[in-house]
Amino acid sequence: MRRAAPPWKRLGLRMRLTLLYGGLFFVAGSLLLWSTYLLTGRALNERFAVKSTMIGPAATPGAGGSPLQHDVMFRRLETDVRQRADGVLDEMLRSSVVIMMLIGIVAVVLGYLVADRALRPLDRVTETARRLSESTLHERIALNGPPDEVKRLADTFDAMLDRLHRVFDGQRRFIANASHELRTPLAINRTVLEVSLEEPEASPDLKALARALLGTNARYERLIEGLLLLAESEQELAVHRTVDAEQVVRAALEQLDLHPRRRRVTLRDDLRPALVVGDPLLLERCVFNLLENAVKYNVRDGEVAVSLRVDGDAAVLTVDNTGHPIPAYEVEDLFEPFRRLQGDRVRSARGSGLGLSIVRAIVDAHGGTVTARARPAGGLSVVVRLPGAGRDG
Image (spheres, rainbow, N blue to C red):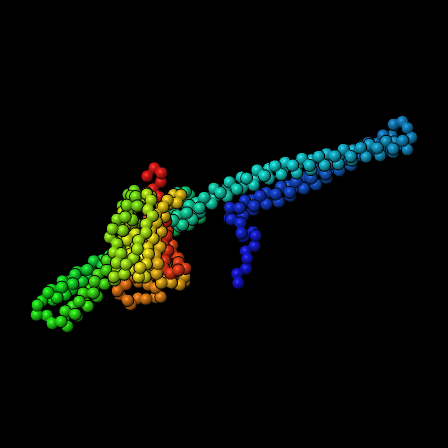
């Protein structure tokens, strides 16, 4: 069991530095104040002792009056001098405390400003790290300033980003090249199988085998296309265009088959204009994958509900579908490549397992978020939030 952090460590570094600066000032000010107070008191006592010797009875032998009168006058003068000295010390102490409090407040404010200026480069590092994803590894901190500890930290972070960018670029190029290289033999296989089906002398068993192989070949073609699209969607966007998300959704709806495997699915839509910035083709593929997934994993006479609205500065697309109950702990795994419900990786008739992975990659590339939850009555509810184009867009 993790122990709770002490209150001191719960504060931010900026506040801790401010309190440290203020505390050090008050400690140093208190030491200076009490040292000044003691030295001033000592100096007054020494001066008072000298004056007492000078004005004592022995110092005025020719003065008139009896020794008793001289002693009474000396005692009165001594008491008056002591009271005046104590008054001076008290007044000095009160004034010093007030001045130290005022200067202490100024020191705390200045300490906060100094800490804020010193930590500003770290805030820049933090903001850059928070924005980073696989599609934004091209960003760099590029901190300008003296070669101090913060500059070395920023340069080290930039060097690490360079290495990561090269690794991810190499991985995406490998996937893209492998996908392109595999397309050719699959296309040749499809052509040979289709020609064999057209042969009049082919036996029924041969044609049945050719049809089965065509189905398998088609599955691998879909898999290769999905891998290629996944690799492309994880790259930095090459197209930044303001587009109406409503038109994108309607274009995806026109391509949708609502009668998969002879099971009719009812579609309900509530679409409103919503401007976003990005690649229209990738956004259309993202929406189509969501809709295709909602139809494919539905039940007979099921429903798919699609809504598009503007929420603040974001466009929100929601796709709900009926279907079989989904365990809540398996929902997040559906966005992993080649993952299907209940860990199914075998049933090729239900797709390649890349649909939702491509959706997440495209949404991340556009700076949005995608979340899903299991519906109590069965099926899935997926919500996509994309940054809006702004009022000026």
